[in-house]
Length: 102
Image (cartoon, rainbow, N blue to C red; front, side, top):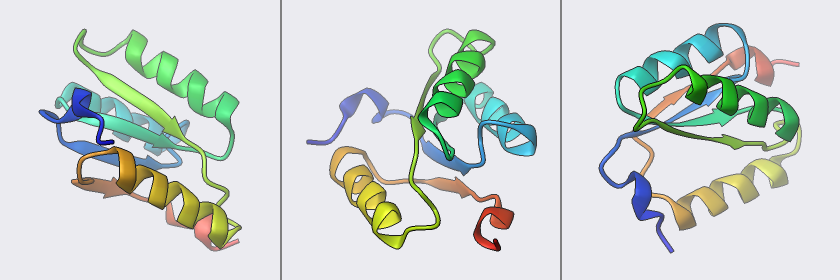
């Protein structure tokens, strides 16, 4: 089932969105009216980032955490399949490429 709560917003996925430049990118995307998906390596960090982002964002803002294990292809594939089955199309992706170089 597609989530219709974000149908009117462009969806943006930011890997490494819980800190640093990624966090700042998420903040800017929220202010621009996007629904932001914070890609991070732990649920705890993702939830904390989402809470912090939404606390300082416009009232209609929406965000969520996505926690695939980037070192395991099956985890990435599972996260992608779940995303595609439950969300409108992704319109913007910002990646922290250093996460893939390890």
